[in-house]
Amino acid sequence: MRNFTWIVGLFLLIGCSAPKVEKSTDFTIEGKISNCDSETIVLIKNTLTKDVRDTFPVKDCAFTLQQKLDAGGYYTLIYNKERITLFLQQGDLLKISFDADDLENSINFTGTAAAANKLIADLAKLNAINFGNPKTLYKADEEAFNAKIDSMKEVLNERIDKFVKENPSVDKEFIEFERASVLYAWANKKANFKMYHAYLTKDDSFEVSENFNDYLKKVDFNNSSLISLEMYRAFILNYHNILAQEKEEENSPEAETDAKDALDISLQLANENFENETIREFVKYSVIHDYIKYSGIKALDGILNKFKAECKNKDFTASLDEQYKKWQHLKAGNPAPDFKYFTPDSNEVSLSSLKGKYVYIDIWATWCGPCVREIPEMKKLIEKFAGKNVAFVGVSLDDTRQTWHKMVVKNELKGIQLYAGGWSSSIAQDYNVNSIPRFVLVGTEGEIIDVNAPRPSENIAEILNGLEKI
Image 1 (cartoon, rainbow, N blue to C red):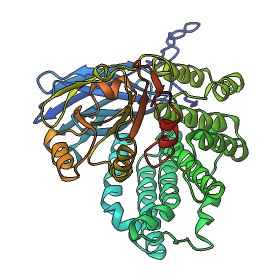
Image 2: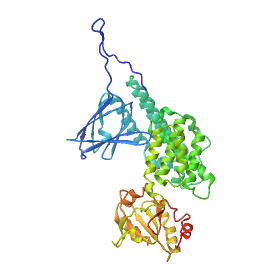
Image 3: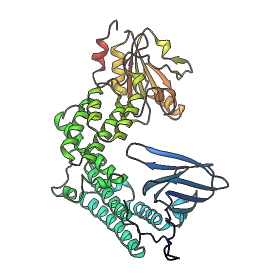
Image 4: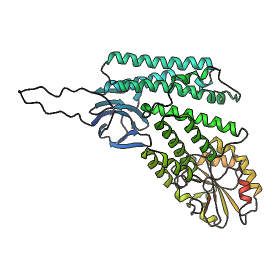
Protein backbone atom coordinates (compact mmCIF):
# COMPACT_ATOMS: atom_id res chain seq x y z
CA MET A 1 0.00 0.00 0.00
CA ARG A 2 2.82 2.39 0.81
CA ASN A 3 6.33 2.69 -0.59
CA PHE A 4 8.92 3.21 2.11
CA THR A 5 12.68 3.27 1.77
CA TRP A 6 14.50 2.11 4.83
CA ILE A 7 18.17 2.50 5.64
CA VAL A 8 18.82 -0.79 7.37
CA GLY A 9 22.50 -0.51 8.07
CA LEU A 10 25.94 0.23 6.70
CA PHE A 11 28.56 -2.01 5.24
CA LEU A 12 30.86 -2.37 8.21
CA LEU A 13 33.23 -4.84 6.64
CA ILE A 14 33.97 -5.57 3.02
CA GLY A 15 31.84 -8.52 1.94
CA CYS A 16 29.63 -8.31 5.04
CA SER A 17 26.23 -6.61 5.21
CA ALA A 18 24.13 -5.68 8.19
CA PRO A 19 21.18 -7.94 8.89
CA LYS A 20 17.85 -6.73 7.49
CA VAL A 21 15.75 -4.88 10.04
CA GLU A 22 12.06 -5.74 9.73
CA LYS A 23 9.55 -3.10 10.69
CA SER A 24 7.26 -4.21 13.52
CA THR A 25 3.72 -5.06 12.48
CA ASP A 26 2.48 -4.03 15.93
CA PHE A 27 1.25 -0.65 17.04
CA THR A 28 1.29 0.43 20.66
CA ILE A 29 -0.87 2.94 22.50
CA GLU A 30 0.10 4.10 25.97
CA GLY A 31 -2.39 6.24 27.82
CA LYS A 32 -2.76 8.28 31.00
CA ILE A 33 -6.17 9.51 32.17
CA SER A 34 -6.97 12.21 34.71
CA ASN A 35 -10.22 11.91 36.67
CA CYS A 36 -10.62 8.31 35.52
CA ASP A 37 -13.67 6.42 36.75
CA SER A 38 -13.77 3.34 34.53
CA GLU A 39 -11.58 0.25 34.69
CA THR A 40 -11.71 -0.54 30.97
CA ILE A 41 -11.07 1.14 27.62
CA VAL A 42 -12.26 -0.15 24.24
CA LEU A 43 -10.47 -0.08 20.88
CA ILE A 44 -12.62 -0.52 17.78
CA LYS A 45 -11.45 -1.32 14.27
CA ASN A 46 -14.20 -0.58 11.79
CA THR A 47 -14.35 -3.01 8.87
CA LEU A 48 -16.81 -3.20 5.98
CA THR A 49 -18.92 -5.81 7.76
CA LYS A 50 -18.54 -5.22 11.50
CA ASP A 51 -16.80 -3.35 14.27
CA VAL A 52 -14.01 -5.42 15.82
CA ARG A 53 -13.95 -4.51 19.52
CA ASP A 54 -11.14 -5.22 21.98
CA THR A 55 -11.37 -4.29 25.66
CA PHE A 56 -8.28 -3.46 27.68
CA PRO A 57 -7.84 -2.82 31.42
CA VAL A 58 -7.24 0.62 32.89
CA LYS A 59 -5.10 0.31 36.04
CA ASP A 60 -4.14 3.28 38.19
CA CYS A 61 -5.58 5.55 35.48
CA ALA A 62 -3.16 4.17 32.86
CA PHE A 63 -3.43 1.68 29.99
CA THR A 64 -1.31 0.03 27.31
CA LEU A 65 -2.75 -1.40 24.08
CA GLN A 66 -0.80 -3.41 21.54
CA GLN A 67 -2.10 -5.06 18.38
CA LYS A 68 -0.83 -6.43 15.09
CA LEU A 69 -1.70 -4.45 12.01
CA ASP A 70 -1.80 -5.55 8.36
CA ALA A 71 -2.01 -1.99 7.04
CA GLY A 72 -2.57 1.54 8.29
CA GLY A 73 -6.09 2.58 9.14
CA TYR A 74 -8.56 4.30 11.41
CA TYR A 75 -9.53 3.14 14.87
CA THR A 76 -11.87 4.45 17.56
CA LEU A 77 -10.84 4.55 21.20
CA ILE A 78 -13.77 4.66 23.65
CA TYR A 79 -13.52 5.57 27.32
CA ASN A 80 -16.91 5.76 29.02
CA LYS A 81 -18.94 7.68 26.41
CA GLU A 82 -15.99 9.63 25.00
CA ARG A 83 -14.76 8.63 21.54
CA ILE A 84 -11.31 9.38 20.07
CA THR A 85 -10.65 8.76 16.36
CA LEU A 86 -7.10 7.54 15.66
CA PHE A 87 -5.01 6.79 12.59
CA LEU A 88 -2.40 4.08 13.19
CA GLN A 89 0.28 2.40 11.08
CA GLN A 90 2.63 -0.52 11.52
CA GLY A 91 5.28 0.17 14.14
CA ASP A 92 3.55 3.26 15.53
CA LEU A 93 3.91 4.26 19.16
CA LEU A 94 1.21 6.67 20.29
CA LYS A 95 1.11 8.17 23.78
CA ILE A 96 -2.17 9.75 24.82
CA SER A 97 -3.13 11.76 27.88
CA PHE A 98 -6.49 13.35 28.60
CA ASP A 99 -8.86 14.49 31.34
CA ALA A 100 -11.98 12.29 31.33
CA ASP A 101 -14.05 15.32 32.40
CA ASP A 102 -12.85 17.54 29.52
CA LEU A 103 -11.44 15.37 26.77
CA GLU A 104 -11.82 17.84 23.90
CA ASN A 105 -9.69 20.53 25.55
CA SER A 106 -7.19 18.31 27.34
CA ILE A 107 -6.20 15.57 24.90
CA ASN A 108 -2.49 15.45 24.09
CA PHE A 109 -0.48 13.19 21.79
CA THR A 110 3.21 12.31 21.73
CA GLY A 111 5.15 9.53 20.04
CA THR A 112 5.67 8.58 16.40
CA ALA A 113 1.97 8.85 15.52
CA ALA A 114 1.37 12.13 17.38
CA ALA A 115 1.24 14.57 14.46
CA ALA A 116 -1.40 12.74 12.42
CA ASN A 117 -3.66 12.15 15.40
CA LYS A 118 -3.33 15.74 16.58
CA LEU A 119 -4.57 16.79 13.14
CA ILE A 120 -7.60 14.49 13.46
CA ALA A 121 -8.42 16.00 16.87
CA ASP A 122 -7.95 19.55 15.58
CA LEU A 123 -10.25 18.93 12.61
CA ALA A 124 -12.91 17.41 14.86
CA LYS A 125 -12.77 20.45 17.15
CA LEU A 126 -12.92 22.89 14.23
CA ASN A 127 -15.85 20.97 12.78
CA ALA A 128 -17.74 21.09 16.08
CA ILE A 129 -17.13 24.83 16.45
CA ASN A 130 -18.12 25.72 12.88
CA PHE A 131 -20.98 23.24 12.43
CA GLY A 132 -22.99 24.52 15.37
CA ASN A 133 -26.57 23.38 15.88
CA PRO A 134 -27.66 20.98 13.09
CA LYS A 135 -31.27 22.19 13.31
CA THR A 136 -30.16 25.79 12.78
CA LEU A 137 -27.99 24.75 9.84
CA TYR A 138 -30.68 22.78 8.01
CA LYS A 139 -33.46 25.23 8.82
CA ALA A 140 -31.56 28.03 7.07
CA ASP A 141 -32.47 28.93 3.50
CA GLU A 142 -30.47 27.38 0.69
CA GLU A 143 -28.13 30.33 0.17
CA ALA A 144 -27.22 30.58 3.86
CA PHE A 145 -26.84 26.82 4.13
CA ASN A 146 -24.46 26.65 1.16
CA ALA A 147 -22.40 29.57 2.46
CA LYS A 148 -22.05 27.92 5.87
CA ILE A 149 -20.97 24.46 4.75
CA ASP A 150 -18.70 25.82 2.00
CA SER A 151 -16.99 27.98 4.62
CA MET A 152 -16.65 24.97 6.91
CA LYS A 153 -15.05 22.94 4.14
CA GLU A 154 -12.59 25.73 3.39
CA VAL A 155 -11.54 26.10 7.04
CA LEU A 156 -10.90 22.36 7.38
CA ASN A 157 -8.91 22.17 4.15
CA GLU A 158 -6.80 25.17 5.20
CA ARG A 159 -5.94 23.36 8.41
CA ILE A 160 -4.86 20.30 6.41
CA ASP A 161 -2.74 22.48 4.11
CA LYS A 162 -1.02 24.03 7.12
CA PHE A 163 -0.36 20.58 8.58
CA VAL A 164 1.24 19.34 5.34
CA LYS A 165 3.59 22.33 5.25
CA GLU A 166 4.61 21.70 8.85
CA ASN A 167 4.95 17.94 8.33
CA PRO A 168 6.27 17.41 4.76
CA SER A 169 7.11 13.74 5.36
CA VAL A 170 3.63 12.78 6.55
CA ASP A 171 2.08 9.72 4.92
CA LYS A 172 0.39 10.84 1.68
CA GLU A 173 -2.41 8.30 1.92
CA PHE A 174 -3.39 9.65 5.32
CA ILE A 175 -3.65 13.17 3.89
CA GLU A 176 -5.73 11.89 0.96
CA PHE A 177 -8.07 10.21 3.44
CA GLU A 178 -8.43 13.36 5.54
CA ARG A 179 -9.15 15.51 2.48
CA ALA A 180 -11.69 12.93 1.30
CA SER A 181 -13.34 12.90 4.74
CA VAL A 182 -13.83 16.66 4.52
CA LEU A 183 -15.23 16.42 0.99
CA TYR A 184 -17.70 13.61 1.67
CA ALA A 185 -18.87 15.07 4.98
CA TRP A 186 -19.67 18.23 3.02
CA ALA A 187 -21.39 16.23 0.28
CA ASN A 188 -23.41 14.30 2.85
CA LYS A 189 -24.77 17.54 4.30
CA LYS A 190 -25.70 18.61 0.79
CA ALA A 191 -27.49 15.31 0.19
CA ASN A 192 -29.50 15.70 3.40
CA PHE A 193 -30.48 19.34 2.94
CA LYS A 194 -33.70 18.94 0.95
CA MET A 195 -35.25 16.36 3.28
CA TYR A 196 -34.08 17.95 6.55
CA HIS A 197 -35.05 21.47 5.50
CA ALA A 198 -38.53 20.36 4.43
CA TYR A 199 -39.02 18.56 7.75
CA LEU A 200 -37.75 21.37 9.99
CA THR A 201 -39.67 24.11 8.17
CA LYS A 202 -42.76 21.89 7.74
CA ASP A 203 -42.70 22.67 4.02
CA ASP A 204 -43.40 19.42 2.18
CA SER A 205 -43.33 21.22 -1.17
CA PHE A 206 -39.77 22.50 -0.72
CA GLU A 207 -37.40 21.96 -3.65
CA VAL A 208 -33.74 22.91 -4.01
CA SER A 209 -32.64 25.23 -6.80
CA GLU A 210 -31.74 23.99 -10.26
CA ASN A 211 -27.97 24.20 -9.64
CA PHE A 212 -27.96 22.81 -6.10
CA ASN A 213 -27.00 19.29 -7.17
CA ASP A 214 -23.91 20.51 -9.02
CA TYR A 215 -22.01 19.31 -5.94
CA LEU A 216 -22.37 15.79 -7.34
CA LYS A 217 -19.82 16.70 -10.02
CA LYS A 218 -17.18 16.88 -7.27
CA VAL A 219 -17.74 13.39 -5.86
CA ASP A 220 -16.84 9.94 -7.14
CA PHE A 221 -19.36 7.16 -6.63
CA ASN A 222 -16.97 4.49 -7.86
CA ASN A 223 -13.71 5.11 -6.00
CA SER A 224 -12.95 1.75 -4.40
CA SER A 225 -9.69 3.10 -2.93
CA LEU A 226 -11.83 5.09 -0.48
CA ILE A 227 -14.11 2.27 0.62
CA SER A 228 -12.18 1.83 3.88
CA LEU A 229 -13.04 5.44 4.75
CA GLU A 230 -16.12 5.67 6.98
CA MET A 231 -17.27 9.06 5.71
CA TYR A 232 -17.06 7.94 2.09
CA ARG A 233 -19.16 4.85 2.83
CA ALA A 234 -21.64 6.97 4.79
CA PHE A 235 -22.12 9.32 1.83
CA ILE A 236 -22.44 6.52 -0.72
CA LEU A 237 -25.09 4.69 1.32
CA ASN A 238 -26.96 7.82 2.34
CA TYR A 239 -27.20 9.13 -1.21
CA HIS A 240 -28.24 5.71 -2.48
CA ASN A 241 -30.98 5.46 0.16
CA ILE A 242 -32.26 8.93 -0.76
CA LEU A 243 -32.53 7.88 -4.42
CA ALA A 244 -34.29 4.65 -3.42
CA GLN A 245 -36.77 6.54 -1.25
CA GLU A 246 -37.53 8.97 -4.09
CA LYS A 247 -38.11 6.00 -6.39
CA GLU A 248 -40.48 4.41 -3.87
CA GLU A 249 -42.49 7.64 -3.62
CA GLU A 250 -42.59 7.88 -7.40
CA ASN A 251 -43.95 4.33 -7.69
CA SER A 252 -46.40 4.61 -4.75
CA PRO A 253 -47.13 8.29 -4.06
CA GLU A 254 -50.16 7.58 -1.87
CA ALA A 255 -48.91 4.72 0.30
CA GLU A 256 -45.79 3.49 2.10
CA THR A 257 -43.88 0.93 0.05
CA ASP A 258 -43.79 -2.64 1.38
CA ALA A 259 -40.36 -3.49 2.86
CA LYS A 260 -39.77 -6.30 0.36
CA ASP A 261 -40.69 -4.06 -2.59
CA ALA A 262 -38.43 -1.34 -1.19
CA LEU A 263 -35.58 -3.87 -1.06
CA ASP A 264 -36.12 -4.82 -4.71
CA ILE A 265 -36.08 -1.15 -5.75
CA SER A 266 -32.90 -0.48 -3.78
CA LEU A 267 -31.01 -3.44 -5.24
CA GLN A 268 -32.05 -2.53 -8.77
CA LEU A 269 -30.81 1.04 -8.30
CA ALA A 270 -27.49 -0.27 -6.98
CA ASN A 271 -27.06 -2.28 -10.18
CA GLU A 272 -27.85 0.77 -12.29
CA ASN A 273 -25.85 3.43 -10.45
CA PHE A 274 -22.56 1.83 -9.38
CA GLU A 275 -20.16 0.76 -12.12
CA ASN A 276 -17.36 -0.30 -9.78
CA GLU A 277 -17.89 -3.90 -8.68
CA THR A 278 -16.42 -3.37 -5.20
CA ILE A 279 -18.66 -0.40 -4.48
CA ARG A 280 -21.72 -2.08 -6.01
CA GLU A 281 -21.25 -5.22 -3.91
CA PHE A 282 -20.79 -3.13 -0.77
CA VAL A 283 -23.99 -1.17 -1.37
CA LYS A 284 -26.03 -4.30 -2.11
CA TYR A 285 -24.57 -6.08 0.91
CA SER A 286 -25.44 -3.10 3.14
CA VAL A 287 -28.99 -2.92 1.81
CA ILE A 288 -29.63 -6.64 2.36
CA HIS A 289 -27.94 -6.58 5.76
CA ASP A 290 -30.15 -3.73 6.97
CA TYR A 291 -33.27 -5.41 5.58
CA ILE A 292 -32.53 -8.55 7.60
CA LYS A 293 -31.63 -6.53 10.71
CA TYR A 294 -34.88 -4.57 10.74
CA SER A 295 -37.37 -6.69 8.80
CA GLY A 296 -36.27 -10.31 9.19
CA ILE A 297 -35.89 -13.03 6.58
CA LYS A 298 -39.44 -13.52 5.29
CA ALA A 299 -39.47 -13.98 1.49
CA LEU A 300 -35.73 -13.23 1.36
CA ASP A 301 -34.22 -16.58 0.33
CA GLY A 302 -34.29 -15.93 -3.43
CA ILE A 303 -32.64 -12.51 -3.18
CA LEU A 304 -30.09 -13.69 -0.65
CA ASN A 305 -29.07 -16.77 -2.62
CA LYS A 306 -28.70 -14.73 -5.82
CA PHE A 307 -26.47 -12.17 -4.11
CA LYS A 308 -24.31 -14.85 -2.48
CA ALA A 309 -23.84 -16.62 -5.82
CA GLU A 310 -22.68 -13.40 -7.52
CA CYS A 311 -20.73 -11.76 -4.68
CA LYS A 312 -16.94 -12.14 -4.71
CA ASN A 313 -16.41 -10.70 -1.22
CA LYS A 314 -16.73 -13.68 1.12
CA ASP A 315 -16.78 -11.41 4.19
CA PHE A 316 -20.08 -10.00 2.89
CA THR A 317 -21.66 -13.41 2.39
CA ALA A 318 -20.41 -14.69 5.76
CA SER A 319 -21.84 -11.61 7.50
CA LEU A 320 -25.23 -12.09 5.86
CA ASP A 321 -25.25 -15.79 6.82
CA GLU A 322 -24.54 -14.79 10.42
CA GLN A 323 -27.35 -12.20 10.37
CA TYR A 324 -29.73 -14.70 8.76
CA LYS A 325 -29.14 -17.30 11.48
CA LYS A 326 -30.27 -14.82 14.15
CA TRP A 327 -33.77 -14.91 12.65
CA GLN A 328 -34.23 -18.62 11.96
CA HIS A 329 -35.90 -19.29 15.32
CA LEU A 330 -38.46 -16.62 14.41
CA LYS A 331 -39.71 -18.23 11.21
CA ALA A 332 -43.45 -18.75 10.85
CA GLY A 333 -44.58 -21.93 12.62
CA ASN A 334 -41.83 -21.90 15.25
CA PRO A 335 -42.78 -21.40 18.92
CA ALA A 336 -42.95 -17.72 19.83
CA PRO A 337 -40.41 -16.90 22.58
CA ASP A 338 -42.25 -16.54 25.86
CA PHE A 339 -42.10 -13.38 27.96
CA LYS A 340 -43.55 -12.31 31.28
CA TYR A 341 -44.05 -8.72 32.41
CA PHE A 342 -46.23 -6.62 34.70
CA THR A 343 -49.31 -4.52 33.93
CA PRO A 344 -49.84 -1.01 35.39
CA ASP A 345 -51.74 -2.72 38.22
CA SER A 346 -48.72 -4.97 38.94
CA ASN A 347 -50.39 -8.09 37.60
CA GLU A 348 -47.97 -10.47 35.90
CA VAL A 349 -48.90 -11.59 32.38
CA SER A 350 -46.98 -14.00 30.15
CA LEU A 351 -47.41 -14.76 26.50
CA SER A 352 -47.92 -18.45 27.32
CA SER A 353 -50.82 -17.55 29.63
CA LEU A 354 -52.70 -16.31 26.55
CA LYS A 355 -52.52 -19.66 24.77
CA GLY A 356 -55.79 -20.47 23.01
CA LYS A 357 -56.08 -16.92 21.67
CA TYR A 358 -54.44 -15.19 18.78
CA VAL A 359 -52.09 -12.52 20.14
CA TYR A 360 -51.21 -9.27 18.37
CA ILE A 361 -48.17 -7.72 20.07
CA ASP A 362 -47.18 -4.06 19.80
CA ILE A 363 -43.57 -3.40 20.89
CA TRP A 364 -43.26 0.34 21.40
CA ALA A 365 -42.05 3.24 23.56
CA THR A 366 -43.48 6.62 24.57
CA TRP A 367 -40.60 8.54 22.93
CA CYS A 368 -41.16 6.86 19.54
CA GLY A 369 -43.14 9.16 17.23
CA PRO A 370 -44.28 6.45 14.77
CA CYS A 371 -45.34 4.29 17.76
CA VAL A 372 -47.50 7.04 19.22
CA ARG A 373 -49.06 7.76 15.82
CA GLU A 374 -50.35 4.16 15.75
CA ILE A 375 -52.26 4.55 19.05
CA PRO A 376 -55.53 5.85 17.50
CA GLU A 377 -55.47 3.09 14.89
CA MET A 378 -54.78 0.48 17.56
CA LYS A 379 -57.78 1.69 19.56
CA LYS A 380 -59.97 1.29 16.47
CA LEU A 381 -58.58 -2.18 15.88
CA ILE A 382 -59.24 -3.29 19.45
CA GLU A 383 -62.78 -1.95 19.26
CA LYS A 384 -63.40 -3.69 15.93
CA PHE A 385 -62.31 -7.07 17.29
CA ALA A 386 -63.96 -6.76 20.70
CA GLY A 387 -65.32 -10.17 21.74
CA LYS A 388 -63.18 -12.01 19.16
CA ASN A 389 -60.58 -14.64 19.97
CA VAL A 390 -57.64 -12.28 19.87
CA ALA A 391 -55.67 -10.52 22.60
CA PHE A 392 -53.96 -7.19 22.01
CA VAL A 393 -50.75 -6.76 23.99
CA GLY A 394 -48.61 -3.61 24.19
CA VAL A 395 -45.05 -4.09 25.46
CA SER A 396 -43.10 -0.94 26.32
CA LEU A 397 -39.33 -0.55 25.90
CA ASP A 398 -39.25 2.71 27.85
CA ASP A 399 -36.28 3.14 30.16
CA THR A 400 -38.47 4.17 33.09
CA ARG A 401 -41.71 2.58 34.26
CA GLN A 402 -43.08 5.95 35.40
CA THR A 403 -42.95 7.47 31.90
CA TRP A 404 -44.75 4.46 30.43
CA HIS A 405 -47.37 4.33 33.18
CA LYS A 406 -48.16 8.03 32.74
CA MET A 407 -48.88 7.63 29.02
CA VAL A 408 -50.95 4.47 29.52
CA VAL A 409 -53.20 6.36 31.93
CA LYS A 410 -53.26 9.66 30.01
CA ASN A 411 -54.13 8.06 26.67
CA GLU A 412 -56.40 5.39 28.14
CA LEU A 413 -54.56 2.66 26.27
CA LYS A 414 -56.64 -0.46 25.77
CA GLY A 415 -55.69 -4.11 25.64
CA ILE A 416 -53.04 -5.66 27.89
CA GLN A 417 -50.30 -3.12 28.61
CA LEU A 418 -46.94 -4.45 29.85
CA TYR A 419 -43.64 -2.84 30.78
CA ALA A 420 -40.46 -4.64 29.59
CA GLY A 421 -37.90 -1.93 30.32
CA GLY A 422 -35.41 -1.02 27.61
CA TRP A 423 -33.57 -2.53 24.67
CA SER A 424 -31.81 -5.08 26.84
CA SER A 425 -35.12 -6.69 27.84
CA SER A 426 -35.75 -10.32 26.91
CA ILE A 427 -38.45 -9.50 24.36
CA ALA A 428 -36.17 -7.07 22.52
CA GLN A 429 -33.38 -9.65 22.45
CA ASP A 430 -35.48 -12.74 21.69
CA TYR A 431 -37.45 -11.06 18.89
CA ASN A 432 -34.46 -9.21 17.34
CA VAL A 433 -36.06 -5.83 17.92
CA ASN A 434 -33.75 -3.23 16.35
CA SER A 435 -36.38 -0.59 15.61
CA ILE A 436 -39.88 0.25 16.77
CA PRO A 437 -42.79 0.08 16.41
CA ARG A 438 -42.64 -3.63 15.85
CA PHE A 439 -45.73 -5.82 15.61
CA VAL A 440 -45.87 -9.59 16.05
CA LEU A 441 -48.78 -11.95 15.37
CA VAL A 442 -48.89 -15.22 17.35
CA GLY A 443 -51.26 -18.17 16.80
CA THR A 444 -53.55 -19.93 19.25
CA GLU A 445 -50.96 -22.64 19.98
CA GLY A 446 -48.25 -20.11 20.70
CA GLU A 447 -46.72 -20.42 17.24
CA ILE A 448 -45.34 -17.49 15.23
CA ILE A 449 -47.59 -16.36 12.38
CA ASP A 450 -45.65 -13.21 11.49
CA VAL A 451 -42.75 -11.80 13.50
CA ASN A 452 -42.94 -8.55 11.52
CA ALA A 453 -46.68 -8.13 11.13
CA PRO A 454 -48.42 -5.14 9.51
CA ARG A 455 -49.21 -2.10 11.64
CA PRO A 456 -52.73 -1.19 12.80
CA SER A 457 -52.72 1.56 10.15
CA GLU A 458 -52.00 -1.06 7.46
CA ASN A 459 -53.91 -4.25 6.54
CA ILE A 460 -53.71 -6.18 9.82
CA ALA A 461 -57.52 -6.08 10.24
CA GLU A 462 -57.91 -7.95 6.96
CA ILE A 463 -55.34 -10.54 8.07
CA LEU A 464 -57.04 -11.02 11.44
CA ASN A 465 -60.42 -11.46 9.77
CA GLY A 466 -58.94 -14.24 7.66
CA LEU A 467 -57.72 -16.30 10.63
CA GLU A 468 -59.50 -19.52 11.50
CA LYS A 469 -61.86 -19.30 14.49
CA ILE A 470 -61.08 -15.69 15.16
